[in-house]
Amino acid sequence: MLRSYLDAAMRHAQYEQLEDDEGFYGEIPGFDGLWASAQTPDACADELASALEDWVIAGLQLGHDLPKVDGLTLSAPRIA
Image 1: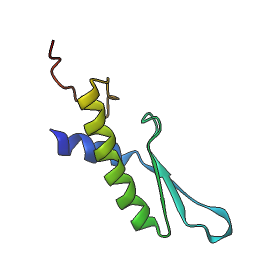
Image 2 (image 1 turned 90 degrees about the vertical axis):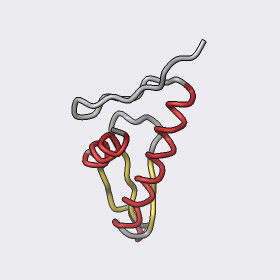
Image 3 (image 1 turned 30 degrees about the vertical axis):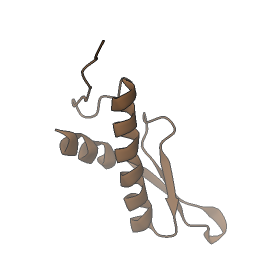
Image 4 (image 1 turned 60 degrees about the horizontal axis):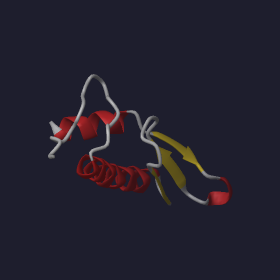
């Protein structure tokens, strides 16, 4: 389920080339504060995928509601 969620989120990634040959910037709409930058499009996608994994794991550990992606949701059990 986790892999399906991460793959679905990455399909929504948006990239742009930065000015003055500064590389590329990527983000996923709805995933606030999640972004990456790198010198090449492939490296930017790799950085974004890594950041997404960390973002999701931290969100689950902290009990945050994660965005629904293509009908998929992730949640961690709440422990009292």
